[in-house]
Length: 172
Length: 261
Image (cartoon, rainbow over all chains, first blue to last red; front, top):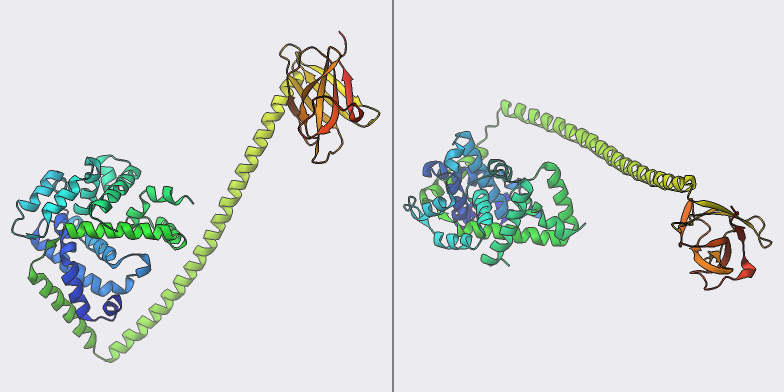
């Protein structure tokens, strides 16, 4: 798969898009609420995957992780470049989860009830870090600074959350 | 390295999120290549991230895919339809020159970085050595101050134990505080013993020898011995390692009486 991508076989990008665009778009569209901009970022992300595939090193991690970080970073950069204020970002978690079924109902969510359920299995603290880091596009240091939590605590909370999610999401 | 502790700091989650400093990245990557458990853990973390993202999936408008594929095809055709003009040749020459220059620079700076990194490690090692030496000296000084306070203390009586016929060269001193019953020993000259034997200090109390503890010949400074009360004399014998219940008088090395008054 990666070899085909590296040899610039566009059928491989087609495959990649079909399999991963929803997962990547789920992250992007939570960080960027404007649908047009989010779609534009998704396009840019796939173009980046295509152009930068030579930088991907399978020794250093999974392809999906690499793509996810490209998407997350691209989305974060976009919110910064447009100077979308932090105030807009700091909506409550409940609001964020409820938007899944509420105002964004025009989008096709695969399993947002499942996500809510999974997140509700976490402690409030864990849910908070997972939501802000993965779904709201905060970096660990931003989260630490803005909510006055020591960076080490952010890291260990995320660690505990990931262990719980591993069980909840049945990752083997 | 304690792998469990390292993992529990959450460093691998930060690495998977691409949120580590370049130095941390180097460290994590070197650890990953050394410890298969770390690699397994990272894999599990990455799979969890993927599972979470899949759970949070949102299907984009189908038109986005068309746009992506169009842009890719567009970029491809541009690459193929490159004009082979003179300008193109200049561009090639220039890019080769730049490539050579940057490779040289990369090599040059890598070299410098390597030298610096070695020098830094050297300095760190030296620093640790100095810290260790400093601690050792400090401990020694503490002991000397402590010893000195005993020697200086008027409550302690000094008893010189001189060599017996067995060993005329032997010389040791006992500092004894009759009130607190504390006993300290200082070796001036005692012979080397085999591993099997140790010196034993005896106090003569009411005409009978009382065990005041064992010691080795290589002890420096004052050594604290067992407390003794009512002693009139002290003696040192050679006994099997660990000490004896009664002194082996034939092996007596040194002896000294308390000066009266």
